[in-house]
Amino acid sequence: MQSVISYKERGNYGDFKYRGNCSGYVIKDLIEHFYPKSKPKKFIEVFSGGGTGKDVAKELKINNSLHLDLNNGWDALVDEIPSGSDCVFSHPPYWDIIKYEQQRNNYSPNDLSNNMGYEEFIKKLDMVNEKIYHSLVNGGRHVILLGDVRKNGKYYSIIKDMKWFGDLESHIIKVQHNCMSDNKSYSNNSFIAIKHEHILVFKKNKIWLFNTKETNTVKENIMNLTKITWRDLIQATLEFLNNKASIEQIYNILKESKKAENNNFVREKIRQTLNNNSNFIKTGEVWILNIN
Ligand SMILES: C[S@@+](CC[C@H](N)C(=O)[O-])C[C@H]1O[C@@H](n2cnc3c(N)ncnc32)[C@H](O)[C@@H]1O
Image 1: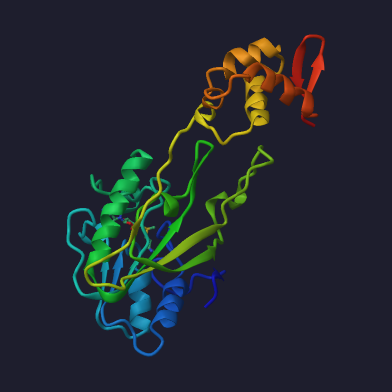
Image 2 (image 1 turned 180 degrees about the horizontal axis):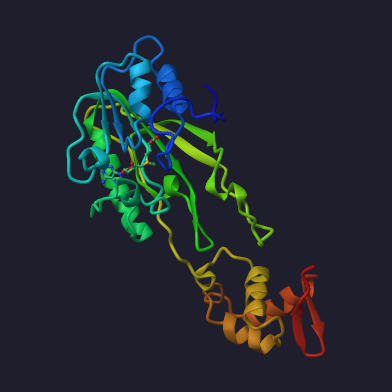
């Protein structure tokens, strides 16, 4: 197995009409790669959807397997993950991109694909991933398949925003075929269609201690930075002032910056920076940005 995988066919596994299903070859190859000599002793599939994993387990003659989903009465947020698995495969909804309520014809308040804010979705996914991790036996793996999402022009990387439990053993890119977006044309030329998904393999390597990793977004203001250059501060100031400003106007803004705090010659520094950078040109008494 390599770090990029691509299956044009999904194989004869599970319900091919189940929306958002994955190819059975993904699960089959992962199991055969990570358990080459003996199959997992207890294989659990969380978010089993249309039965893809169940058919793979049958083909691989894994007798001890469980395939859990709201559609067979098991709720990942409420119910326990059966214990003692050495391999859990999970394929959660990609936020609310595909609504599984419609697929099931039945509303569940805990469906991870319900309409909800992104933070709430990530929090719920973290809860499930933590439960999965703790349910593993030492040496066990949680293999998770997830995609990125673009919504209202914003890009969301679920694998980066969710919390990680355990040690990352592999990150595999799965090329996506037959996407709903394939037939769409986009007016925005800089738009890059998402044609890949991620498989992360987390391993439990210790009984008591475990690593977690989480990212958080911090909004900062460049006015509070000391490591930024005067050139970049002046560029930002000119952009803010619609690309035309006198030294006095630039000074009146930048005198409030952190960088100006310990400098007794801020006006002179601004003049020197404007004069020494070809990015700035003077026309009459005003300076403009000259970025080509
Ligand atoms: C991306 S699909 C899985 C598709 C599956 N791998 C297949 O090949 O058919 C996600 C699944 O998560 C299930 N799901 C959503 N919220 C759930 C919850 N709280 N508990 C259990 N299953 C849930 C949905 O019913 C859906 O079947």
